[in-house]
Length: 211
Figure 1 (tube, rainbow, N blue to C red):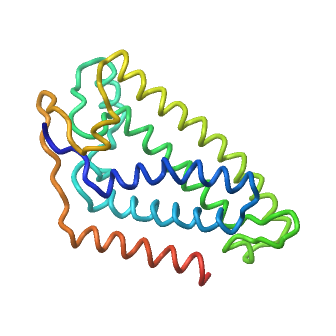
Figure 2 (figure 1 turned 135 degrees about the vertical axis):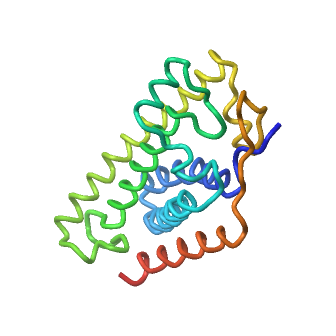
């Protein structure tokens, strides 16, 4: 067994598993104070993941798992091993989910309710009509995100059933059996985590309370 996922990456993943359904429920129930708070938590997580993708552990870095079209085709044709961490195809799924979630959160920062009595942190920067339009786009894009999450879950089930490859347990334990040519994750030092977490917290606080 080798290490493939560090603790921050795993916490990020499972926090979203909890927060996204909670965001849906608070939105449906019009618990907007809670909805905005949870949204700001997701914003902080996304900012952290951005920084962690730049200088975090080897399998968390975008440069370590994002591959070009040639590598993806080679993997699909069985000419390239999956390696450790995300395989070339799974990397596309990760990028798509992060991109969609970032846009959902970004639009949500400018949203407001129909009465204009429960504005999101940045809605004061635009007109009420514009905020209402972005609120609609926020809701529409959320369901596109849900569809992509469904595809993500379907892919995990496919790997489990068709390829006997359990992708869930390693995201819990951080470890899996070494594949051919697989190398153990190179962890990032604590100071990098503190910088990533600190920058994410400061930027989230600025966006949520200062802008």
